[in-house]
Length: 154
Image 1 (cartoon, rainbow, N blue to C red):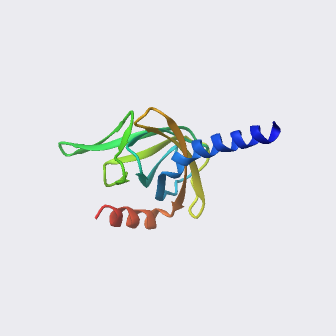
Image 2: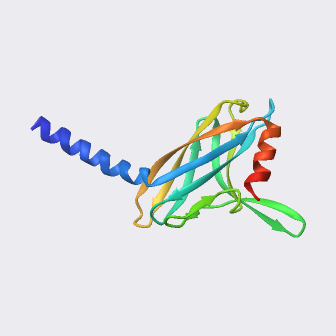
């Protein structure tokens, strides 16, 4: 009986994490922050094998994390919180190039170049099932991050 229970639990765990393995995150990064700076932005490229939506994010280094869009209104770039970011099946979504980013608000300490900040994203599949996806963003020095961002968008 114990063996059957363990096998069943293992099978359920495998099924739950199978979708997480269908969501890939790469090129995740953020800029180093100055002492006293209370917010930071995280960029990444996310690919989901199945149609899904990124619906939330949490980060241990910040009190709040939000999904944001950047849009031009006249001559002004405006940032707005969004409820979700669409992840079309099989298509890499470069958050920066698509006009999105993850916003970390209420930083608990400065983000230090060479370290990483770890976030957990919730991705909702078309069938409504939520899956936790880990994101580990490299913190880049200010000058290097500016160069990376420039190259990333062209």
